[in-house]
Amino acid sequence: MTVATVPSVSYSITVRLEVPAGGKAVSQLTHAVESAGGVVTALDVTTAGHETLRIDVTCAARDTDHAQAIVDNLDDVEGVVIHKVSDRTFLMHLGGKIEMKSKVPLRNRDELSMAYTPGVARVSMAIARNPEDARRLTIKRNSVAVVTDGSAVLGLGNIGPAAALPVMEGKAALFKRFADIDAWPICLDTQDVDEIVRTVQLIAPGFGGINLEDISAPRCFEVERRLRALLDIPVFHDDQHGTAICVLAALTNALRVVGKDLSGVRIALAGAGAAGTAVLRLLLAAGARNVIVCDYRGAVHLGRDDLDDSLRWIAEHTNGEGYSGDLRGAVKGADVFVGVSAPGILNGDDIATMAENAVVFALANPEPEVSPDDAREHAAVVATGRSDYPNQINNVLAFPGVFRGLLDAQASVVNEEMLLAAARALAAVVTAEELGPNYIIPSVFHPDVAGAVAAAVRESAGGRARTGMTEV
Image (tube, rainbow, N blue to C red; front, side):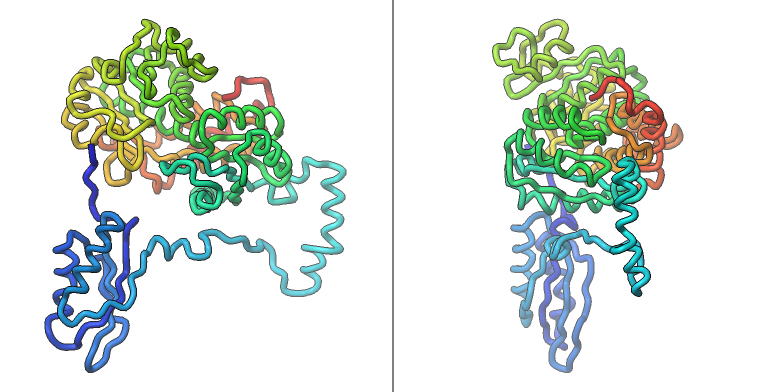
């Protein structure tokens, strides 16, 4: 299964070229791009002369090979001379995407003396006497460490800490854009659990929260568990809990659309790794009762001989009838399919075997578990992780607001009630008047998302974040 793609800004290029000032070359540029299947988004004359014109042609392509085909078409136009081809995505990343800047002026000696020595010594001594003042008098109150070892970056796999840095920078930029949180990329050159835990423990005093990111399963479970036991600030693994919040919020609204209740539906869940396990836990906490989880070996059940601790927990809490078949069998008759696994593992015929008014969440990215177009022929509601289909389930809907609420509440833990509160708040952003098969989850740019999630988490955390409630 291959999902058809259309030209995207992700593969946007700008071609700087020269054409004769007279003749038909200028009018042929747009035709050359469109005949190659591209889309012209801008055409700017940068230098004009009597003999030649220098023009920047900006266009969107499907992928890098397609971009090259567009350039070749432009080069074939009579009289065109190609000078430079710029990939606009790479240009955006030149020198990194984030920066640090001072929040206070340093215009004269008085200001320098207060911001730094000797005045800063008074502030340091105040914190030494009362360490809790660090949240009030330093960046700790609004800072999150985005920590990765580069072992499971997006859908790219184990590409290492340096290659993970652009993704962590992007995460930090999203924290700032959507919740005004100062986040700092921390890319660790180790994939040893002990070293990761110890390193994060050592740097934790400078942060109000830890966001674990793109650490592969099952190591991510141990890293998170141990850090939560060691630290007095919240530790949140976005690949697990951010995904779970968004899935529960979207499913809450999808079931409203089809008139079904979470406690009464049968759910087939593909993926037993970090995201799948977290989604399962939150669905069960929200009231789901009938779930079958499948991994690459088929259904997870107590009779399997390969159960580690995580799979055993899944087997003990799901699949009460002991189904031992494959994913296709689990999907048959199911009301809901949730995929956080691998591309192309189902087809339209499989979705046709689901219950009437089925809900399909095919979230593998960029290629879903089943073609969204095929799924829509048989399911009532379809969601993906992609931006070119309705109902995009994207973690940026959750983590900025979650951390905003945690930091505002000065929480020390993240617990299940906070995640449920976040999911309920996110679902409620979609009003009854707006709700429909193609709108079960708000846009990442909806102005109410981060604030609603933050308020729900803050209220849930208030006065209880330091108690013995069940952590996730």
